[in-house]
Length: 189
Image 1 (spheres, rainbow, N blue to C red):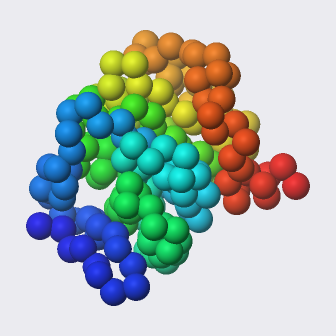
Image 2: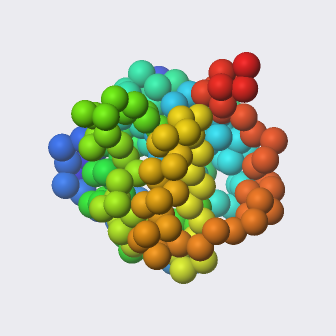
């Protein structure tokens, strides 16, 4: 079983744990779920939790200090629909999440690993596309954004070649168009 910390923060500590989402919580089949993968400071996840009280909002990050802060902010705001996970992205998507559980998966400004010799570390690889497709519901939405042009080009190529996704109009994310993450604010500045 995953460790759930209950002092000044509440989050699931999942690295190196072989668990399924059903081991952590009961989720009704028709529940709307959005995942902010690599949530950073949690700006998007917190905005989603506030706006979508009838949905489950998952915030996941590998850095424990980040997820502690997000969990603390969510607890202070009284968001009982926000669940935080300290976990590596591939582990969460490939093992923990069940088929067809996510309505939207948000991956905003992941590490671009800009050096050519490190490009294999990029999250948005061709093999990860299969896992993303598996966890999204039939009409699920993948929301990807990066400020690194070569990474964006490589990701668009992987998405296109996978044949698993179709491009949607900007209105698919209209409800969160005003939300800016810390990384996005830095990029725009």
